[in-house]
Image (cartoon, rainbow over all chains, first blue to last red; front, top):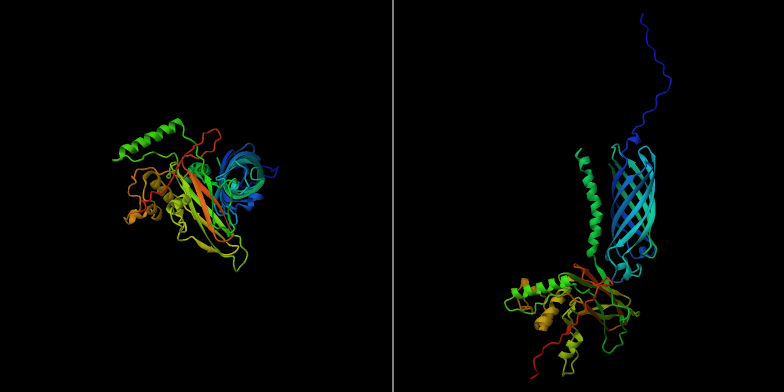
Length: 186
Length: 282
């Protein structure tokens, strides 16, 4: 005589996490960003805030730690009162090597990052205004943080970041970078 | 999805953009002011002849052997192209490759609202590799033998915009644009190498010839001549009140001719001072 099979649930099933952050791509990634750069300190008295565009390429060594290369260009107008240097265009180019720490909460994550590199100015205007030393390329170091939102796609996320960099050769001025970005992880 | 397939390419484009921007920095301008060793452009309004001049000398590097060969070959080609070979020396710093602009600000330092208004003018002279133009020398030549007030004919002026009146405490910012400087460079070359009639050359704009054929003093200049850029810019302030003028030359150097590496030899041009040929007095 056949008997009915019975199954007994001995463990409560785990709740499905959706989306599962483990399924987000990680490894090599690139970012494109747009935003603004404003100078603080001596350079801030001579250079107005300006539009910025930049890019990053990086690699997630672990899910919480990455290394990245960052390039950013921004364009500004000089502020020099009624001196002939006033209202001239000047561009800044910054290149840095950075480390990045990430703390993830589902689709959202917050991160902090920092690095060192070089800043180059397109003209010697800040030298004629007495802000810059003789050379147009100088050391820069700093960092910041931001917030990232991962889409339901494995590859895409968007975010907002702010950074403060110290510019040694601009009489220790600083520049504040605020950008929004789109990230693609391969 | 095609967007996802193309995304790596878009990313590469995004990466290339800042790099391209950075490379464009190679031809961004350099700003040069008169050195501290020169007197500032300042007049008190009490001078008998209220004129003051100072200069910016543009330091160019000297050519290397390869570049010298290219210059000579270019010069030889120009000579062969011309039916009557004129002076076809090719300048090291040419007007087409070195773009100059002069930015200036005049300040009226008077404070009295009743008597402080004054009139000022700013004019420009200069030198290229071959010729130097100094309006004081020209004025002296023109005025020889008479006691009239001296007449000054600058290489470049902003007339009729200037001279103008400036109130006490006011400032005026002006520009000799790149196209103005090109005109001055053409005129100086015409005067120096080709003995063009100087009053006609200085008074007329050369581009007028293109739209309204009329003598402008440049008729004898062969079209294939390479116009030299200025190697020296002299700015003169005239004012009848206490005024100062700050100024800068903005240089865009297409072919990296400006001197900026300590080891490079400096170009040391020796331009001939221009003196007008005047008809003999009756």
